[in-house]
Image (cartoon, rainbow, N blue to C red; front, top):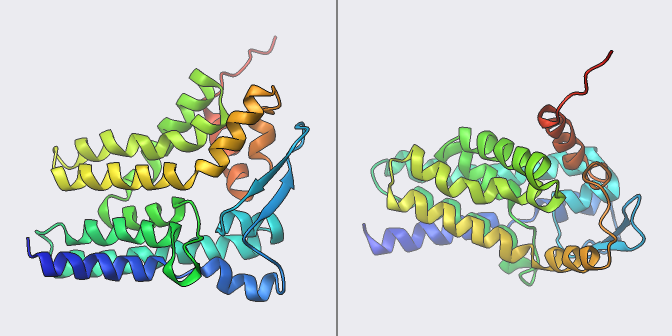
Length: 240
């Protein structure tokens, strides 16, 4: 592997990932609003939740899917395109994986916006469109099933898919160290970026104020989609 090309791949991925389409769309959908903190009440919970991410999810909470969905799609595209370019140019080298991983870092900690970004879900999906498109769906479905059926925990249902990406790519790439390193890296980047929400969740759990899985998922448009997915894993009651 050429170190210079690896550095270029990382820089391109980071700088593209650092583009904040939430902020760009937010200028039109939510003018004069501070997008750096989004506070909302979860039905069934006593305390309010404060999101410190500037992401498609936070924009969707503020302005609905008409603003949030385009931001999410563009956040995927900004990582998918440079990843695809490096994969086409160097199909036998891991530069495209470096580009995809750096795109997640740029999305989460963007240089242009004082390192305040999103949590990485859309950016990870954008890279996976090129790396392994099935990785977008199967690990997340498995993670949802584990969160709903085994742990009955909203956080596990939301985050497990990203962690399951590690064994998934290990299997799909026949143990290739670069694919495994990519999966470990983006999972870590996601969990580190999620620390503010993880702390709030842990405190709410200690206080006994964590609402049901269905209640939490009903707050965001992405959550509503996950809620429909989670319904597939719930055992159906027999009707007499």
